Image (cartoon, rainbow, N blue to C red):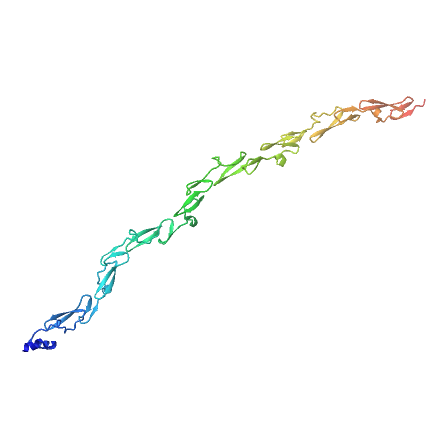
Length: 355
């Protein structure tokens, strides 16, 4: 009867009965313990113990969640992020990695084409990420790459005598007119030597850097491509003597001393025709030298142009000086006066004879 009453009695009555009977009470089973809800209750002889569950810390009656992420007691991979959860933690592979969080492997974005590098850039895989670098000839952040104008930025390697032309991702060098080469090395063309010039036949070609000049030869005038003969006589650029005649010839001139002079044309000396007997004066004339010539003058008693001199008949021309009572007789180059009969004197003066 007593047994039956004890079996159906309240728990505290059971505990009291057990205590009175010397029997252990299992507080863990009858929920008479005060362990935390997050702790495990372990019955002991006459008592019990409380131990916080995994993921919690405390003395069993009060248990607090352990932040494994903060305490670094987690087992996440070095390339994963730890996220604390109640009584545990979660591992998530970082961006650029794949796996369960405890094991993470790098994603090669360059190989699987998950990168966003520009079409004109090179993708390089890195741990957990990738880098983008614009290819040679382009500039930008790797995602956006613009063509570099090497000509404008003067980063080209064209020769100083070449022209730079920008092309996509590069540049082209072309040697300037008058030079030959690959554009990075340009050598002057000697147009005068290879006959590629257009200088006139009467001009001299002189090579210059990248070109050439044409200069008309002496005695010619023009632009070097067209050269005309200079008429030194007409332009008075000759060196003939004042007493010489200038005759134009191709590319030059000739000087000839005028009649009455001798010399090389640039120096002319008067010829003394009277002294060297090269004159044509009459024997009855006087030769007088002049600059470049001479004059002939008939002697007294003669008349003519000096080259032909005829005796003057003073008697006939009445240019004599005979007296009126005298008779004029013409003689070579002169005249004679003879007083008439009944007169005496020299003929220029006649006096009546007193018989």
